[in-house]
Image (cartoon, rainbow, N blue to C red; front, side, top):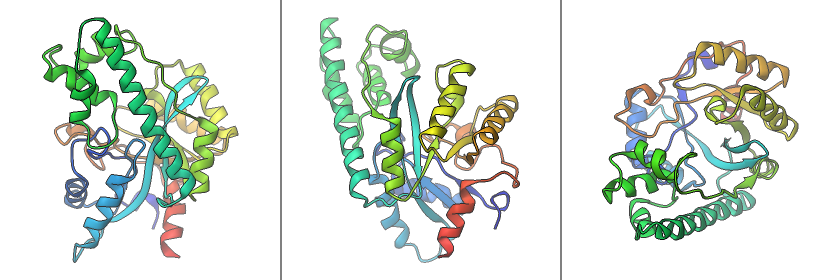
Length: 287
């Protein structure tokens, strides 16, 4: 079956990272949207995926298939990016080591935030953030903690005033390198996908160089279909995909059920004549 005839979403999150739904609720939502293939790609975690797989096994009738995935935060010469590892072996030892390392780096980053907030007489932010997270600590949890502590009115203000690029509190990231992330994903039998390329704070020129380096490092695919991507930007990404002989992927990057424009399965379609990761996945599902 070609990708144009399938209802899929290869990018979604649960409350094990910065989503709000449990894995079970996410599966139920995917079924209500008549999805056939769903990738749960939590940030630096496979716990939501594993819980969802157990839940799906208990269902008597379902046309939904879960595709093993994870989204790794990655350090590059161009800044932080996100990379989806799709169709991975979730029991691969080396990948699990990378995931464990990433989770530890997140806790260390939070401790640095605590120290820097203490310097401006804001105390308790570390524990307040940990209280909001299920497993992986993200800046979204930190922003929500700032809201609950009545220091800002919403997450957007939290990033603008404190933890965003121009905020008062600067904490450097130290994620796994791009080459290491790709090797770990490939070692687990997966496809390395550059997530939502146009959302990174960089110029088109720098993004062009990033995609070239991603390809040279062995990256497999670009996300070229996701909410808020303009038709012009999509066409430009497709040109870069062709230049570097990359596959394409698509997904909603689902986090919150109340944001209908990023709901599961809601992103622009991709022409069926473009090489797609779904073709590889379908072949493996048939084996």
